[in-house]
Image (cartoon, rainbow, N blue to C red; front, side):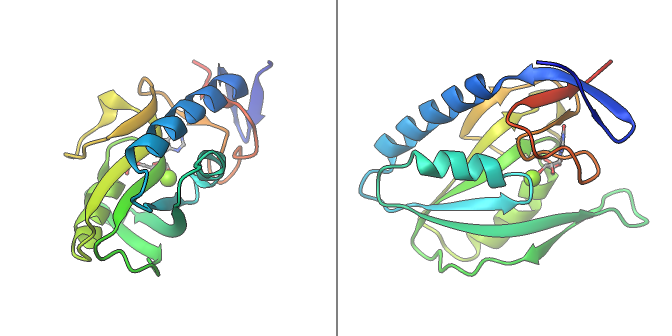
Length: 178
Ligand code: IMP
Ligand code: MG
């Protein structure tokens, strides 16, 4: 595999398509066992997690539903920033088992802001499944239940993840070249 250029930056191969798919298969097997008979809702957070959600969901063999929401971070004049819901939840989650599907957890801010909103709709349970977990960057108290990869605090693109809107359309994941 060779390096890729996205806008002004160069990225080098980091996680291969094969490795990503292997970890997703393992996660799917685990979820197929743990959620058998529960008809969980996979709640995918757009945009970054669309490929991960698709590949994971294709390997879910139990009864399950999928839905999508879009959360956006807006950095205002204050340093804290703000998370708004750009496309909301249309499913009735009351009494349901929810698996949140995220591409990457960085500071945890996005989910930390969204979780109380979801909890107020009284689901039976909420678990969080992420493809990539930047463990060192976590700054908000968010518990990650399933992570395919723990990665260092370095910027990555590919397989749904973007740099300024670009670089999502690759099968592998690439890391910013030092
Ligand atoms: P958090 O709210 O700080 O956990 O950030 C989560 C969001 O930041 C992700 O859903 C991504 O959209 C974005 N993000 C964080 N790290 C990266 C990265 O290395 N590459 C691309 N996007 C990232
Ligand atoms: Mg995301």
